[in-house]
Image 1 (cartoon, helix red, strand yellow):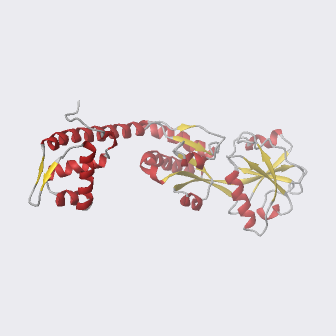
Image 2: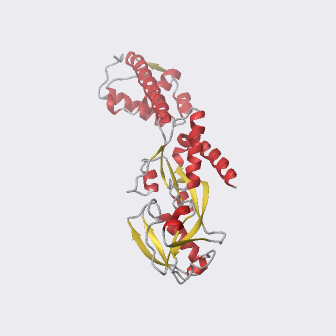
Image 3: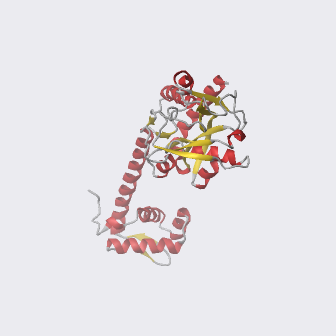
Length: 317
């Protein structure tokens, strides 16, 4: 039981208790206000509000000195107990949060990213850090999940500028080259490679799902950089597992990531041609993205991701 009978104390601001504690220790308004980085008048207003809330005087003050009343001495002990209990619980909750797995979502199917995740899992285990929870919520965009604190880190192709404006940090992870998927009867199918400029007279498949919408933005921008807006056909309800099985018409091209696992087996089982692009900018950049105010929480795992990225990318080079 706390050594003081409070009257309606539930509405007292915890900061007022901290201010009173400082004043009770110094018994000097000027010194206490200086340590608290507030003005003397602000401190006086807060102490008066605290006394009104409690219904008693905590301090006797005149021009020469400040003294604690009997109620003030008892409340000092009570306020220290409240502050210490709150601070200790906050530390425990913070430690508990650090032990919980970080939640990761976004583009999780990329071959290079999968290798990075595998290496990172081993590094996390060897460092004694909690494992990461990789779970895809297809019904929401990963940036919305980040903003709503449903996940901690997202892997996406969203532009760094857009992320910066939204208060996110972006860390480059991988670049995956464009591959053009088309029917064997397509006019471009006889080529050995593609260029973005060659797409002017063809129709591109535009996948409309949370995985690919940012990828389409990149494709569209690459075309606009060359002076044309691509013709497109929207495909709904697809996901990372069936992009490669989406039928393409005779004058259609589906631009996919070269790191989709099914890509390497596709030409053996389907009447399609998969051609690489030679343009230097024909790639999907992938970033690790997190909220700026979560930097401390994700720092250890992001350090591991960077280490794993450098190991995997160096090995692939």
